[in-house]
Length: 389
Image 1: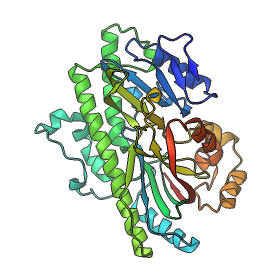
Image 2: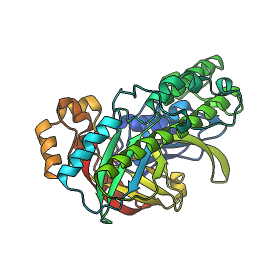
Image 3: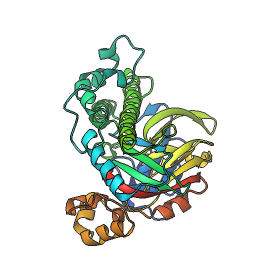
Image 4: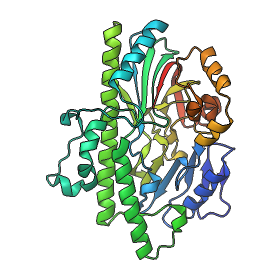
């Protein structure tokens, strides 16, 4: 669907039921003076902060911290194991041991993790080139290998390829938040001083790429993307260790893909800064991961390289209800029964967990149907057990 009314450039959507809040934010994006070609909304799109989650924005000459978001580098990883079966008692034992080695929610490790596990840099002036990252490194070293909260999860799954899979969704923890907030605040102040035409109420303050502030943000943003990957890798290594202490198995290499970042790419004949906020790369041949709620299937996919989506696809099912709304309106017994009928060992234990209940999310079947021109499905994964942040 193409929406071009009221906008300088078109909005192209892979859904026909975009909520009003997300659509208003997309209109703001499409009216930015530096927005390029069109705005793309993936089928999991819903309202975010400044920019819709599930949105892709290309810009000329600027980077927008809020078009990346606060959990910089947040993404997915997945591993295929040699296991073809996993009995319930063993699964419960494995999940219990995972909870002992991977802190969730606001929890961190009590001890600093091995500094060799964090990303290296080629910069000699560490504290100057990475001022926010370096000042938060003490906390970051204790947060490495931790899940976080919200919609982050560790899931044990059975694939239609006959194998047991492990999937993790997590990001850069507090490190990405600190970088995002610092540079967004700088962008807001600079935009005010420049008498920018971009309305401050839209929360889309920008940094011109030729400024020292933009170069610093991109440098620290990229570090956070790498830190988020290191965080997922450490968790996956520890989950695999738990598995191997309980069952005899081998595993394939980890698949990884991020969904909150900005990068320079060439599209429609121009070099532009592509912001993916809750959207993943789906370049032709790229292996990706599209998860759903803990009560629905997830997918390993291969990108088709559709230029109209800026070589992107959805990062998940997408929310259909806000967190507070889900806690108010969803039926706890019904959500628990749905998960138990599916045979999922789940984490919906009280009303406070309803924000991540299956009914808070869109129908993943509809989402996948809406983006069949963006990705091919390689493996369909059914949840067996879920650990939520």
